[in-house]
Structures are given as structure tokens and as C-alpha cells.
Amino acid sequence: MSRISKRKRIYMCMASVMCMLLLLIPLPVSANDQGSILLKATVEDETTVYKLSNTEFTMYQVGTYKNNSWALVSEFAKSGVIFDFDDSSAQAEAAKKLEKYVQDNNIKGMSGKTNSDGEVMYRDLEKGVYLFVQTQKTQISNQVYQSEPFIITVPGNYDGQIIWNVTAEPKFKNESIPPVSYTHLTLPTKRIV
Image (cartoon, rainbow, N blue to C red):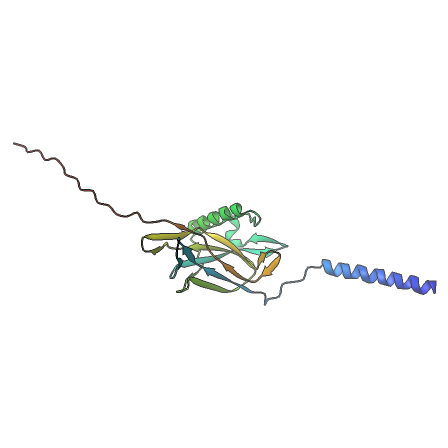
């Protein structure tokens, strides 16, 4: 009986070790793991929320997930950007640097314009890091709005939850047009004789 229980314990230990080893093996991502990014372009003043329709954004895939970390795709490898998603100011600086790299290297992206609700959807996105750039300023009355470039990951990790269908709300700067004022000047005239 002692031999049987000893043998059982050995098998149980071996089974436990095998289970733990299986947990350490990374599982491949299935080809069906695709996500989306919904941009909601809105601004507000003291009393009203404005949906910025017909606002164009261009998306660039700048990174991918390799070896358990985010890495630049080959097209952006020489940009010198390092992803740091724990520091929002570092992320903002990375987005600005990537935008300049796009301009300097004439890189083409996927463009989309917001609808009447101020929304544009980018679908069927693979696991990656995406840069968004507003291509032209948007004007409402005498108010002009421009978004800083920004970066979004698919999937997103929010409060420990993995989200494949990400919703983002770009931050806009208000670059108001100053009112035009006219100054009437009267120039002295001197008569030459």
C-alpha cells in the first residue's frame, strides 16, 4: 500500500509539473484576432457639445507585438521611437516624432473622414500600434480645432481588460480666429510746390 501511494504521489507531482509547464508556453494569436478603432471627434464650450463632422484623420500602423513586447514595424524602424505606454507625456512625444517621420519620409496611411456624428471607424486591424494624424484643421464658426497626433494600441488594455474594439476621443486645441478689426488711418499729406 505504501508503494501504491508513493507511486500516486510521483504521478501527481509529474502531472502538476506538466500543468505548470503548459501555463508557461505562450499560445499563438489566432488569425481571427482583429480589432477596430472608433474615433469620436467632439469639442465643447460652456453650453454645447459639437460633433466635428468631415474631419479627416490618417492612420498609420507603426508597431506590432513581437516577443511579448511592442516593436516598430520595418517602415518606422529608423524613426528612433521607443514605446512607453506607462508615461502619457512620452507617448505624446513619440506620436509627434512619428508624425514628423511620416512627413519627412512621405509615408502613406489610411485616411477616413468623420460622419455627421463626428465618428470614423477603422476596421479589421491586426494587433498593433497605430498613429493617428488629423490632416486639416476643422472650423466651426470662428473656432478652429486641431488634434495633436496620438497613438492607440489594438488591443487596448484598460483597467486590466483586453479590448479589441477600442473607442478613442482625440483631444483638440482651439485655435480661434481673432476677430478682424479695421483701423482707419489718416496720413498727412504734404503738398509739394
